[in-house]
Image 1: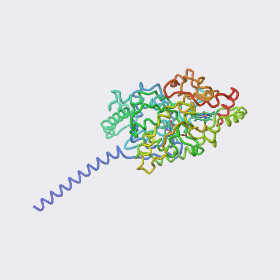
Image 2: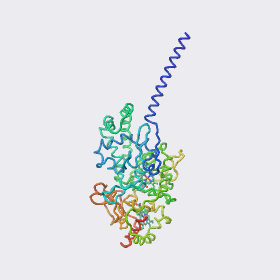
Image 3: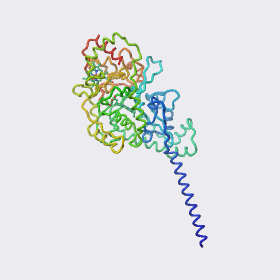
Length: 477
Ligand code: HEC
Ligand code: HEC
């Protein structure tokens, strides 16, 4: 009897051990193939800025292999040839992703976005030139909304099935049997579901004017999707901003309406806005981004400058503009009330006190926390360093050329095309009219809601000689 119980005991122990091993083995495999995080590290601060993870892959990133093949499987949903580059992405030679897209393994390779997707610019002297990339410049061509809508259209297509997608992936990547199973039964169906859910959370976009390249509605997604505030009818469409030279911006408020006063918080909220969660946000990686944008100098104007004309323009600048725009100017980096500046007020009205309060509470339990979001009543008198590459001008990108900004609003360009990166040295800004600009560009109509080009009348009453000298001087900033 005792012998039998001992034997039975041994058998039971063995079975339990086997079960534990099996469960453990499956658990390990599941962890390895679905959750294991492989850190990425770029030695160069510029490469880190362009490609390094800021923690957006977990929640909003798409499995890399799926993301990679979508343009090949659903080209009809893109605005033109060239895959992702038709949405204004810049894809450098030898890179696995375009500028501003990270690739990180969390169980399996996933795609995420980085600050550089919106904060890098390109320009060309002539159409046949290769674009020159300037990290931290405001993008003039990345169509963030177009990218979202492309992904949504793919997920809604009945061909978005495991068979079709896997077939596409096999051209790029060999998958193990286990990976094939995971992609077929878990990763592809879950991706489709997640994209459709994401689409619902962006449904509010469809009743408002399109952002177009180089612009986004920066905080409505945060209000409605992250902070859980009720959907309202505001339109916040705004132009991207440059990030260089923060060392000289110390003490300036940030964002077009100055809704932040801390650079560190602006950097961290940037990552939350891009889809990082409170837990996935990569604070150490963002500290490197902050150090990089702090020390980086603004890009010098790369074309010829008429130095004597620019010298004539300097005192005109000092008299008419310096108080709000020069480093050391008494109002530079402060909010100028909307009643005084008179530009389109939609972007300003998009941000509310409730939103600021909710964002300040959002990360209260986290070490990084947010405390400096606020509601203001106007727009920031931004510093003009690297001004030539900030075109189109004003917070909504409504004025294509510097020359235009010095005209009375009724004489400023009413309809133009943005998204083309050939430079117009005469008017100072990106070429915004003509066949080529129309072909690649987005039609910007200043009569559309939130696109108004009124206000900012400074310098409009100068003589045409003085305006010319002033514009020449502005190239030197
Ligand atoms: C999807 C596009 C997009 C991404 C990605 C993005 N930004 Fe921005 N960023 C913008 C836009 C647009 C503005 C201006 C928004 C406004 O105030 O209306 C801006 C403004 C800023 C400003 C304020 C600049 C100033 O002089 O006031 C900072 C700083 C900034 N972003 C940093 C970052 C960082 C750091 C990241 C990455 C963690 C990031 N952004 C990611 C679009 C983006
Ligand atoms: C009283 C303050 C004030 C004065 C004076 C002033 N500006 Fe501005 N400026 C602003 C504000 C505020 C904005 C942002 C307005 C907006 O985008 O809605 C701005 C925006 C700009 C921009 C757009 C920057 C960008 O990145 O798109 C340019 C260019 C500019 N100003 C040039 C000038 C010039 C040139 C003068 C002198 C002739 C001048 N400003 C005088 C307050 C001022």
